[in-house]
Length: 324
Image (cartoon, rainbow, N blue to C red; front, side, top):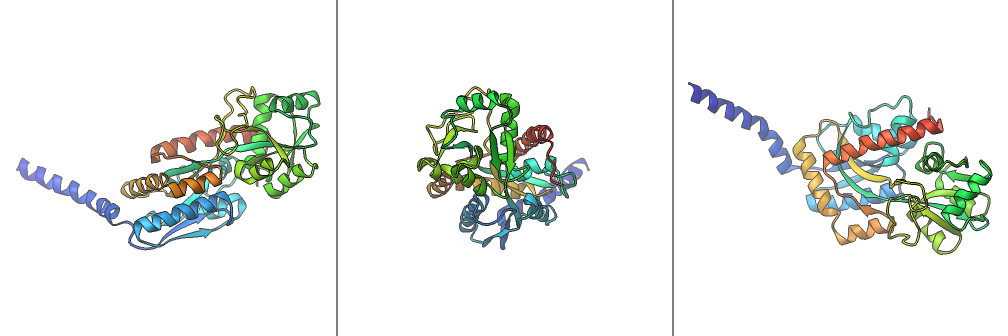
């Protein structure tokens, strides 16, 4: 009798695992939709389209990109949180949206951790601290000295309140013990343009968005936000090298699914993503965006997200910024 019970229990356990294994083996059997909560043309869109094309080739199924911009990424992100947890609706987003918004929005219609399944990271991209040619500072140390000489006189622009560009400036002020005046714009290109034109002292800008202006001598790159120097601007020292200890910010991009995604499907997409991120043509696309590939397990990605939500919460609180 005990033997029979053991056999029945074993069959039941195998039967319980069977649908998940079958799903992983067959997935996907139809079109997969990747939602990008930002407008076309930016790094998030570029990464999503590159990864999506490769996944389509690998899976032999269509993978379409759907741009659903608005409310700082909230609209598109919410749509994925509410989608069926079957792997056919995915989210490609970046740190600014998934890790900053929980502190920035008081009534966020989703939980960035509980309502999503982290699948894997794609890349990281550092930001450059740039100044106009009229600014006297030729080095990062000289920039800090000017800021300390006359607190609040120097200014920096951003893509808007609560943007990564803005909060990097706030973080620098806290960590370096300086005070510079924030000037919000309706997008980073306008801020960069005013730095070039001499109407604005400085700005934090993603490396790919401003590297051409640096190379043309229109602006000077004084420091880079990452913990290590980056290939896109190898002669630019890090902020940590400039004396602000442990400063290391390189926003990431990654893929999520709705909460409750079957572990077998998560593992399959994660493994396929890791393989794609080693392809030479993909590495070339990432490099043009100033990106460094970042391969991670789902658990590593979840831990990274939780750590960065806590990190940005401190900065948002210090800045006193709210989006609604």
